Length: 252
Image (cartoon, rainbow, N blue to C red; front, top):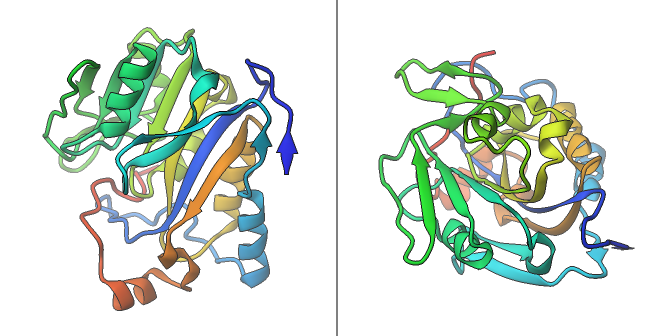
């Protein structure tokens, strides 16, 4: 499928990696999408919503690491971006470093779980020991959590063009659902990992449709485990791959 695109497209650009992840819920509440899961027809409809389009003037380039942490971005369509955000970074943020150097912008990094402070030779990082959620709060361990809208405003970026990367192990569904369209409309490109715990639900579909009202999907990659019917099946076959830094849901 193809779609026309001017330099400043009406809809923005998203690059999505879909994971079937065992994301920890440290708050003790059910994650988004804990309602009845969709049947096979529903899963097929969900995947159909994620099929990428081809933007005629998009030059795709990989930013970040070779494996996990790397994303395809329309390199030429974010000229003039003024600030960038990287949610879920751990000890390394290679995508953030590439973005900072390529577009000469600061990258605001957010991670309240990992105390590491990534560095970037030739780029500018601004680390915030916070996580992303639908609203401002502290969790049971007193970690600071806030919304995308509030964090952007606190950095005086409410009126700027942004590039936002999200990799927060399942918390993205609640956070993006709560983000006003006016805030999302400031984002030129949104490379992200989206994690599904125990099947696709109507709420997952709702978030994707919300995003597609504002974004074109230009790249989609599904991890092999997503094709399995449940997280338990994936773990039984392959084991849990790496720690889950971000919880799957915050208290409402």
